[in-house]
Length: 93
Image (tube, rainbow, N blue to C red; front, side, top):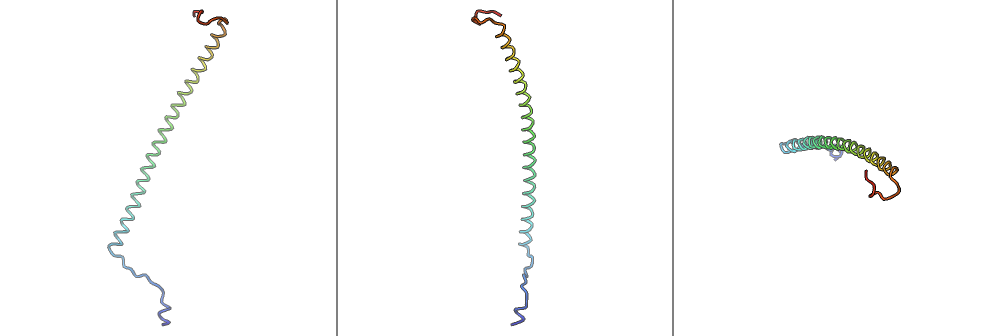
């Protein structure tokens, strides 16, 4: 009985065909998931790049509109300054 207690636990499971197929399937799932993640990252990078380009274009248009707005405001103030206090509709330009 002392010999039975001294023996260590051993897991003796031969690698059969089903285990080999399961390992191959697991490896293919891991590789497939990694490839899918890389593709998703590429799409995300493309979308972010396009978003940044659109933002730059929007900023340029906004600056242009702001410049035009300031110009029109200045012209309006200049016109108001030169017109008399009377009715604006009576005046011809």
